[in-house]
Image (cartoon, rainbow, N blue to C red; front, top):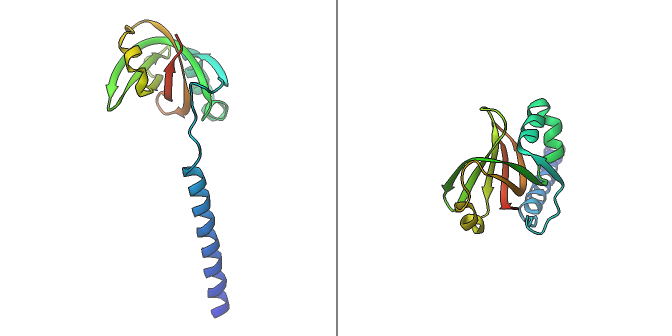
Length: 140
């Protein structure tokens, strides 16, 4: 009985150490500098929404955690905590592209009017009801 407990205890200790190592390496992963990063994909807002609605899993494998450039028409901007959030028209009423802008982009975002066509560069984090981009910067 003691041998069985010892094996289980040892297995639990090894699993715990492995989880701690993985967690720390993920936590200490360097942050992506969007401005200096190469764009993996260039896509329109409408095409990005269409791809996600056609096959979410495959599209997520393609775009998730990638720096992408999205072109679309602004339908909404708002200030949230310490940064602007810009929503691009996805071509239907159900979904859009929500772009969380970097804080230093505030002055540029305030000068942009609703309905204007813009390009943003950011990291795609996936699709919920909208496609989410973080750490975004304006391209034009």
